[in-house]
Figure 1: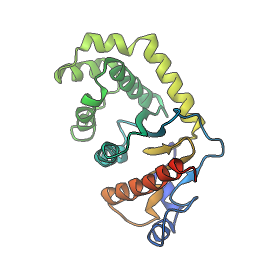
Figure 2: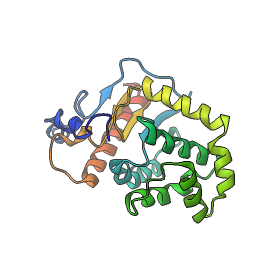
Figure 3: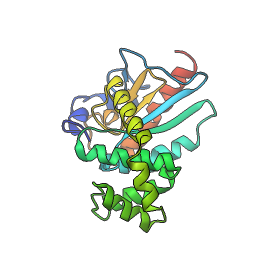
Length: 217
């Protein structure tokens, strides 16, 4: 999903699919190079997925990118950063960082995605979040304390600055090595492809970009 219509990104890259089939990803089509490279972890290839719990494209991409991450070499440092495009998204962002602070985010994420995308739950206020999380075995009172903590507020502020630095205006979006951006939407080439196929194409481009960073190409 975008601040604007997420599908616009696909519509503006009409030859992406053909280029990918003809011999590899092309800058400006399947991926973008950042004008200002961002700081990275020394000795690691940072791979950051910018996402939102409420985004249906992020939900579809989740098993693909998580499977991809498990297959990466030790020099790849993969993590997620929750975006904050508007008020209800910021509430979900606080949920992400509160759960991360508790060491519960990865375990809770499948249930959160399912609640929003399969059961139609908004989870757009701390009370409903705490009630839901209690139902899956997470202490609601401790969660609320984390949600309201200064540490979580600071994490959200840092994430919003990172979102701006990477010029993220749609999700899911994947940043690689502080230098490149790609996404399932960008690799589609205007074709009517399934979410699974878009995801597979995206991780193929990610492999290409990880290798570029690794070989300093």
